[in-house]
Amino acid sequence: MKPINLTALALAASASSSAFATQYLTVEQAQQVMFPDATGFRDVSLQLTGEQMKQVEKLAGLPARSVAWRVFAAYKGDAQLGSLLGYVVLDDVIGKFELISYAVAVNPDASIKQIEILTYRESHGFEIKSPAWRKQFVGKTAAAGLSIGDGIASISGATLSCTHVTDGVRRIAAIAQVALKK
Image (cartoon, rainbow, N blue to C red):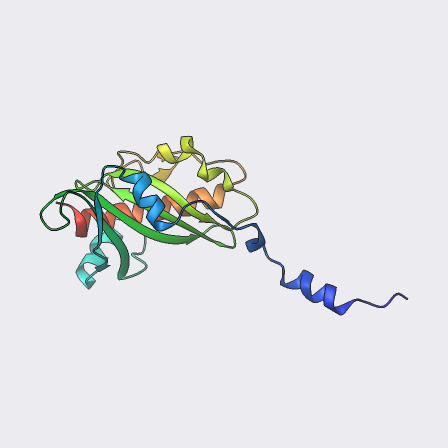
């Protein structure tokens, strides 16, 4: 009988799909991609109230999940007096096993401007980074069209990633409607 190499066994056991992690954009790069005309970004992170959490759940049809949301306002001109271009909301969702970090650009009217995948850690399903798939979200609101099969198509082999990112974007659209809409 051949002896088992315990070191090799331990390394193999500790390996996970996170070895496939790819960072596509930093937060700052995503801000510039989503709001190229912005001259500045200001941290306006949210703390939702209990009432806002209930409203988000009702609009999204999903649990609000957290009271704290990392949000940046994009401005053209002075960050205090300039014109508001919209918001960048950061979030993470579980794909199949690993976290997917993404950013959602929201217009002042609470419609989706753009989404960008920041970091994808799964071994499969990276096709959600495709511009064609992400473009489906543009112009949608929490009210309609932000569900797999209802405005958003799934991708074979990336079903869970598609579903979880779509649910996350719908939740963010509801947060924008409740707490950010101007």
